Length: 300
Image (cartoon, rainbow, N blue to C red; front, side, top):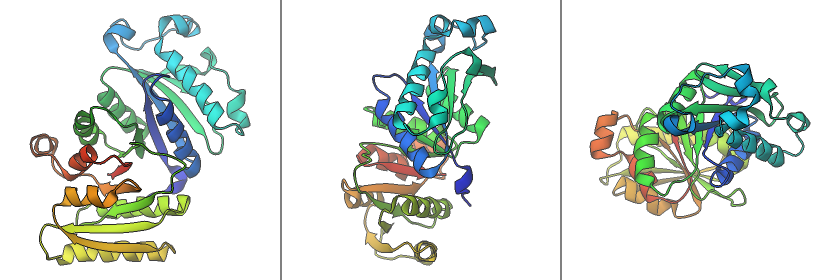
C-alpha cells in the first residue's frame, strides 16, 4: 500500500535552459502531495569533473563555483524552487553555500530544511544519467521519478522505463492549468493493484475524473480482466471517487493512444518482461510512451 505521508519524488535537471518546466512541475507535484522532493543533476564524468570521482575537501566546497560548474545548476534549481514556493519562509532563508553541501555515498548532497510542501534535497552525481538516477532511487528509496519529455522518445522509453526501479512520471506537454481526466489501464497484471492506488491518490488530490480502460485482443474478456476491472471500481467507490469503466477489443497500444487523445493522463503498470525481451520486442509501456503525447505515469 502507498503511504501518502511518506512519499519521496525525484526529478532530474540538466540545465537552466532546458529543465525549467520539468523542475516547476516536480515542485508543483511534490507540493500537492506534500512529498519529499529530490532534485538530481548528473554531470559528465570525463569532462565536467575532470575524470575524477566526486571527492571534495572543504576547501574545494568553498570554491564550488570554480571546481564544479554542475553545482551552478543546483544553485539555479534552489532559486527556482524558492520562486515556485514564495510562501515557504524556511526555504526562502536558505542560501546556497558550503555549509549545506556534503559528500555522502559517492555523490554531493545539498541538504535543505524540511518545510511543509517543499522538503527538498539537491544532489550532484557524475556518470551515465540512467545509471546514476537508478543508484539515487535505490539509495534513498524514492517512490516516483519525474522526468520531462524527450525529443528522442524511443531512447527515453527503453532506457528510463527498463532500468529505473521506481514508478516513473513522464511529463510530456503536461500543463498545470489543464483539467485532465485520468485514464487507468486495467488488466490482470501484478502492477494493476498499485496503479489503482496511484490513480485514487491522484484523483483525490487533484479532483480529476477517472476512467478505467480494459483492452482485449479478442472479443472475450476473461475472468482475470473482469476481476481486475471490478477490483478497480470497488476500490475507487470505497473512496468516494466516481469512475467510468470501458471495455474495448483491439490492439492494446493503439487503443490506449486513441482513447487518451490529448486530454487524458495515462496511468499504467510497468511491464513484467525482462529488459532483454523488452529491448527485442518492446512492451506496452514502451510502445505507449513512444506513441502518445500526453503525460504518462508508469507504476512499479
